[in-house]
Length: 200
Image (tube, rainbow, N blue to C red; front, side, top):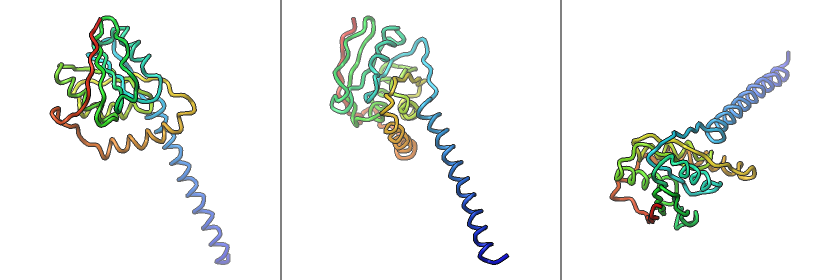
């Protein structure tokens, strides 16, 4: 066997091993994406202290209003996003106190910090957070740093065309939340605008 033949066989062996490793990584990433971003674990209890709707894409408001109409909680907290980009406050739900606010910073972390402070003021022990599926695990992670009680998640659907962006954004935001954002601001340092709607 010439050295050239041995070299060719060695290259083929390395190529097969490399392809096997790449294929295994693709399968692992796909499985993690399915578990974390596409089909996260979600469950909502019959009763909680508050329903919290996060701002962002997806048809979240009907989900939040349906939970409120079912009286899953006596309070509905609605994030209007940065400077209200998420839209106006919804109309009040009978028997449910509605609180709308503009988080600062205008992201999930700012929402978690505000709701954590609100929960401490009201002695809440459980929350139902409404978002989209790619946001669910990240929301639970961020809210658990600002709120010591139970955090449950209810999700709204994402349109098929939005999934590629939401998966890419979801992974980046989740890595940032896990590695770069490690704490929660004290209540005295949290900035926000809060609007209250009188309960019916």
